[in-house]
Every structure is written in structure tokens, then in C-alpha cells.
Image (cartoon, rainbow, N blue to C red; front, side, top):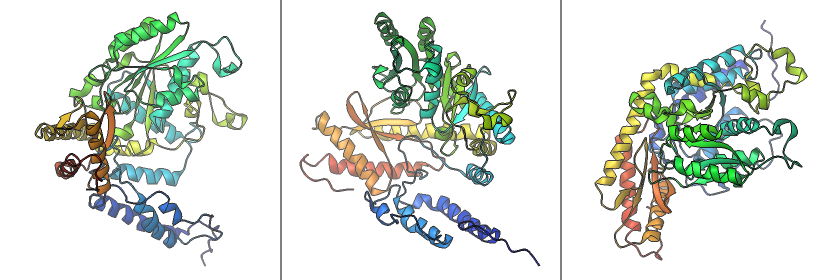
Length: 495
């Protein structure tokens, strides 16, 4: 007679788990198949979802059937469908079958990739996947990397290494109470990501010590202006610590002149960090290798495969020319881990703040293996084509203008109805985005370029097609007709 399995509250018997995992698999497959039929953004109001959930944790366990019902009835109505083919905001982040399967397996294994000993396969697979990404981007073998969740975390680690090279012994002695630590300065264009300020806050160096240099007409960091800023800080007794060159800025996907910036950094002994979180993927294309020209001269490089290499959130890689600097800053091995942390092994816990680390490499390995380099390149090439197509939509309507060159798969454009001044046009562009997003037909974002509000679309979803673009463009035209023809003080209803 088989022995009865007694499970603690909350877990599922093998039979029940098998039934529910099949149900959830069908749910996921149905969601992926039907996603294009859903409104992109929800219509819920703030607090509406919270009001439908219990304020207190349940005293007794809830049956899984009831939990899945709540998923459908409470959670799903509040989801913005980032995987929707008409989601054109921010940078595209696409889930896909192989990577989803990898996530399921990683969750089942539930290993911590902190040392080689605690998970040899997780550690070695991470090393292999990092090498694949490096080769696809065209970086030299002098770079090694480590996986984090996002580029915002990666830049904290890169700048911590740069700070240590300044010779102030901040790891050991800290900053508080010291009069011998000069002001450390970091330089970036006014188009570079806001994570730089956050990193300086975390590192105790102060957000005011990020020197934002006005970008040129093409939204790129001017190397001559960087040189001027560094010299001014040296004259003031400050310590120029690092410069950030961006390959694919957030607003326009512009590319800074990395080689020129590297020359200035070498001259003054300044750390060069290349933020290629989005644009580094363009270098997978033979015709896109130009985007990473000069990156081999950097001290550190960030790329986010969850942006344009079709790995689902979250997955970011920091490449370091001298990865041992991360160990210099962060390596601490407590007694309870000494038996699992041999000196000859790669122990990724030594390369950052995290001790416990998810098995992120598994989903990336499965996605890269399934797509292949040629498959990834074909998808990126298609997104660039869709961006050019969107540019033609703009060229064919004299109410719209391009607000920035189309460099990758991002398009910034502006509605400029005749008879309206710039502030009025700003409001029209904001309202068009609000109306399109509220309609559920698509999802756009605004940004500000040269002091003016513009609309922005980004392509990165493997599901997005020309038909999706046509529907979203029709929604934009409909909204533009409404908002550009009404007096500014007349209420604008949603389209």
C-alpha cells in the first residue's frame, strides 16, 4: 500500500501540482496567443485593485482555484501589457516561448548562483552566456562580465570600482568625518540616464557632482565640452572620477562619440563607462557594428539583453576590463561560506552587492540557443525597418515633424498644428499620448528635446507588425485632429 504523503499547509501534492501547472501553462499559452486582442493599458484608477484585496494576510490557506480566479478577476484588469505588439513605450522587452520555459525551470530549481560550489551549472552557464553576449557585441576578450538585474545596479558597481581607483580608500575608511577626500566628479551628457545620479547618491558622492554637459544638435555628448568641464574641475581642486558615454540614449537612441570621449578620458586618467544598455544590441548586425566603435577602450560597458536581445526582464550584464576591481571593492567571505568559496573558483557573489543570486543565465541561454545569432539579428533588423516606416508616416503628414534623427529603432516626433505656438503644441503632444494610451489602441511616451515636448515610440517586440503600426498611427491622427482644433480652454475628451 503506498505511503500517504503529508504536506505542510500551502504546498501542493504532486498530483495537484501537476494539474495546476498544466492549467497555468494553458493560461500562459492563451495569454500569449490573445494578447494582441487586449487593450494595451488598463482603465483602473489608483487604489482600485488594493480595495479588492484583503488588507490582512489570510489566516487559513486559500485554495489554488480561488487564487487563480483572483488572478483573472483582480490582478489582470490592472496589467499594462508590455508584451502587446502595440506597446511602443520605453524600450521593448519581449517575452518568448524559450525564455519563458527557462524561467519556469529556474524557478523549479531555485538555486542560488553565489558560488561555484553552491551551483556549478548556474555559475558556468552564466560565464558561457556572458561570453556569447560579448562576442555578439564585438567586444574583445579582455572584458569579462557579471550578471545583475538592471543597468541601474550595474552602474553602481562600475562607479564603485572607479571610486576605489581614486586612491581614497573609501571601502575601508569610508567618507564620513574625513577632510582628505576631494570632491569626486562624474560627467555625462544631458541625455544620459538618470541612474548616474542615483549611483552617486548610493556611493556617498552626491548627485550634485554629476556634471551634465549639454548635448550637441544630434543629442550626443560633445568631447570638447567634456574636456573643458574636466579642466575646470581640476583647476577647482576636484577629482574627475568617471565619464559616461551612451550608446543608445533613452530619449532618442543617439550614440555618443565613444572614441573621442575615450581619448579625453585617457589623457586625464578618468574612468570611461559605456552605457550600451539598449544600443549595444545594434552591434549584433554587421551594419550596426559602428555603434560600439571605441567601446573596447572603455573600462566598463553595460548591456541589457532584456531590452533588445529578447531576454525577458530582468537581465543586465556589466562588462569590466579589470573585473578584479569589483572583487577589490565587494569581496567579503563570511565564515559560513568559506567551505563553499574556493579561491580558484568563479564565485559571482564576490563581484557585487548581492549574495543570493537568481539563476538568470538559464532563460538567456535558452532564448539565445533557440533564436541563434542570426535570428536575433533578423529581429533587430526588422525593428529598425519598422522605425524607418514610422518615419515615412511622419514625412507624409505635414502636421508632424521628426524631432531627432532615427538612429536605431526609436522615433521622436512632434505634432505641430498650424496656428499654435510652441507651448500650445507641447500641450497637444501631451494630450495625444494621453488619449492614445487611454484608448487602449497603443502605448506611447513623451519626452522633452531642446525644451519642447515630443512623442516617442520604440520598437523591440517580436510581435509588432506593420498592421499594429497602422492602427496606432490612426489613433494618433484621430487624437491630433481633436486636440489641435479645439481652443486650449475647451475640455478634451478621450479619443
